[in-house]
Amino acid sequence: MTMKIGDMVRHKLSEGGLLGIIIGYHQAIESADPTYLVKWSDGRLNWVLQRLMEPIQ
Image 1: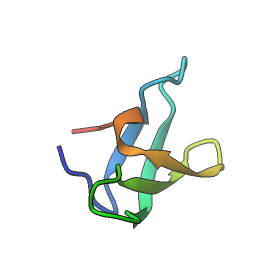
Image 2: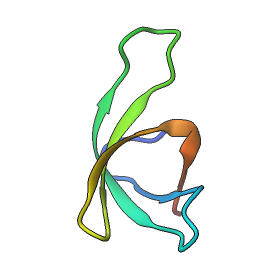
Image 3: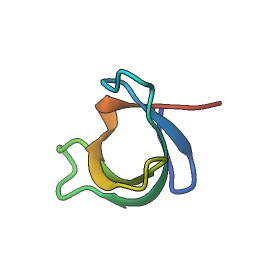
Image 4: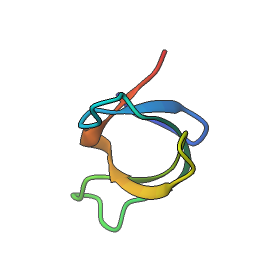
């Protein structure tokens, strides 16, 4: 599933189900995995690969 800026996501590897909002996007080359800039609910800001997140409906 394609995610976009403004989507709420959950980190798949987080024990507590950390939630965040996508605030940026980068894909260096077409064949690379997209990377998203996420503002997490605990205040951190990280670049995260798409495969490590799941969208919240």
